[in-house]
Image (cartoon, helix red, strand yellow):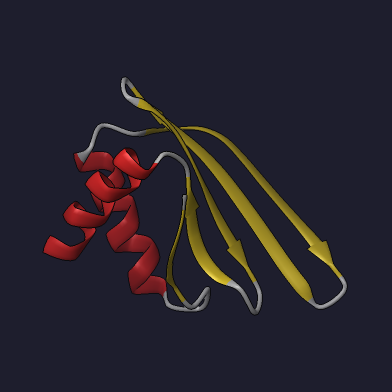
Length: 82
């Protein structure tokens, strides 16, 4: 499943997503950054006891979370409380 959190340029989204992930017990395990022409791409892998999610920020696409539907729904619910 893929959840588009919002535009890649909104700092508040990153802060709220980070807080929601922490509250759900996720820890950062890997990060990557690259450029392709006019696009910046960042990728973070987070893990908890329940599984793994991939967070990506890409110019023109936005901030997204990829992983299992159950994990994304848990993080999304926490995110919406903020």
